[in-house]
Image (cartoon, helix red, strand yellow):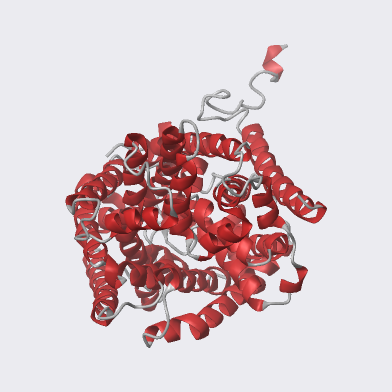
Length: 56
Length: 546
């Protein structure tokens, strides 16, 4: 395989695979606290409930 | 107050975000990823083709994804999962709903012939398992075998009922999945079908790389060289840039009306910006990494570079249905690999075909209150009747005529109309804000400019070019149509019938749209009333049972 063909193949693959992994990584990270898939809790944590002034 | 139609019909929802993305990607990944892409790359400059290809992906593909998801989700705010309603939600003008009729005609026409093409893959999966074509080891023999299947009444190999049987099976399975609904049908199929498709493709790509080479003794790596070897002398040819843009356009399944319907089941709290990128990227992985590593390297290893070039130029279906079976016959466990190849094409096909009828089902459910199951099976019956025409009149080029006007030129027309409506009539600011509602990423601001000016201009150039070089000559019955080649002798009457049928379907849907608007007392100038957001979204708990 010529260096030119190898270079173009590598660049094309890196671009599409990189975009795919990046987008799915972002999606899974966004779902960490709010995942209908069952990855995380069913609902986002409610701010202030655990650290409110009443817990002193 | 919402109209009767808006309150009567409960909406559907996606079970999960990953399921939604897999279904969207399943819609996009089709036969073209594995058959059309490698041939286009090899025929248009190899590695240097990838430059205009990725430029088109960034300037045309991804923006169109966001625009279609945006139009769909905006339509969902008014419980409109069909294009006439979505266009009406964007443009408060009586003409908007009639423009949207294109988004009902294209899916029905494409569904009816696409399920025929899909039935070939199902039939060849079976023929591979049973070893039915074993022993046919030349291009001529396999070509005759394929023709005997395609041309009903040829009867030299297959009985006439065989293609009809596989067509009924393909269409029936499509409609059965569709009738089960968004979450329990389409999403479930995508969750099963997409991983199978990727595993089959990966196994085949690895197996092909270890092919020893046929009588030519050429390494399959030479096939990758054949696809990616840059030929910069072709870069100044407009046809190469248009071929790249065309490939991006077809591979992402834009202009069909199906992505919009899928997106209409999302709420404004759901992300569409990142999901749109993930869908497009998944499709590109299937196309560039896997699609480019199977058929052409296998053909090069077996037939040599010159032979593979001939095969690629003779058409995508010859590559997939004539050359690949010959390659499989030379492999140990070839029947298994043959079944995997046609099986992956079948899964690529069915995850796309189930999407095609969704805009029509949404239209009749939302506007007339019909049950999903009833509409699905009626659409299936209509597609069956039209599909039979594609089977019985195959030799006269009926199927290629529909493929060109609905599945090629029609998509570009539809995409151009929706970009103009969303970015110009709806206004860039509103469109930009709409796409960013609930977004997990901020889209680079340059894309607002690209979506407003560059994407419509790109599409306009494609439309003008295709109009001048293809559509007008085809309309005058000059030259061949895409995969169909020239019109056969005596085929003119079938060409006219096929065109008249498309027009008749358009008139029928225009009348249905008019009846629906009158029946539900919609006021085009006032627009629709927004429905409660709690009925929409990807959270199972928010799904409203019928």
